[in-house]
Length: 522
Image (cartoon, rainbow, N blue to C red):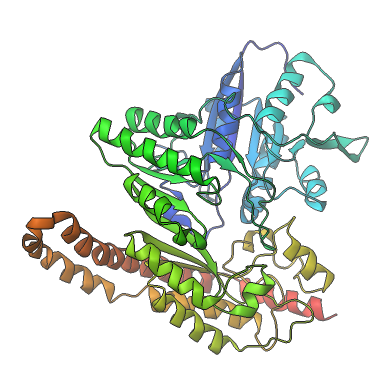
């Protein structure tokens, strides 16, 4: 029950921790998720509310940790009691932890609200039966603001658009809320609300939605953008108040609005000149933007050094199944264009994507691995991420595999395995699920190796050679920095992959997988 006698209330937003063994952990403690920050920033401007964000993956600054993992919520509730708790369900693999946290607060009589990409279809009922009082469907800034206001004013909850809750024991859905289009009325994301975190890479964003229609992705709909001035203000504010230097623009595809993107890049370039400081940015971008040299030049001038590209696969039949309208040979050529412009290219791939009905395509794991390795070398990719297909809730891929009876039961292979590192459905013949998982480790293991520790030493000793580039120190620095940085990253990647493999061997996933396979055959 909501206590109306209090003068001030506390809204605690929680980003649940990743499963115990997760390959993303090395990055998670350097950044945070932008979505929960946006929602908390709106509530922070409401009269009578105190707000804090607890990112369980980033508790590096005096964060109270539980012996079982994540934050110590019993300590938090004793130190600063929350009246309402918001739970971020943007990553399906964190859902079991989300429900665990929800149960803790529910037992203490605290109102629990959950939202994020995971909650669609049957998962809404699952959440409401797992100690979640209200599920926010879609974007949450206006919805959460109205919902918290309804608690204080005793307004009928069913009047709040875009939520689901239990009414008379049944799931009740209020009218759908229209997607936001006016972002200028929102406060800037306030990352200082993330308590205990030590942030090195600051998330910022301008565009929501994606014009592509990938079968495996949950982000759909017409792109909606804030102004270039708003994005610049977010970056400049963090640079000037937090001494921030490294930024990640979270837009699904940077450059979707070409002219406005170029204008933003030019504004950001001028801003860096005015403060006499160089910033470092990473963006996600479409491969075909390599053809737009004006855009690439503007990006480089703005301090965008690293680009993340979803190559997905070097196998033509898999690209067709994903609805990707591009050929593997064209992909490698376009990737090299980014390389020539001086970008560091982070390649993102999906291994073993399931073919569609009617496609007569069968390929052994060994041949797939060979094609991946050949493409990675040809495209000159600097850093690499290879994941397995994940039939996330709300995607066409999940609908297709469910209709074919190929998805393993959640009872056996739970949501915590939906992070792209584990097989969660029966793959195409002649591959087995075990081969799928071993294959991505083979590709990553070939790319990230211990030998790069020795390469690091070589690059350090070769540093004095920059004296020969005194006439063009910028070119000399680039020629030295790129291989040094890649050697450092690849040695670090070896440590991460080795640690993940060690933890995996301690787990009981293979037993769960066999049980799931047996259930599927029945």
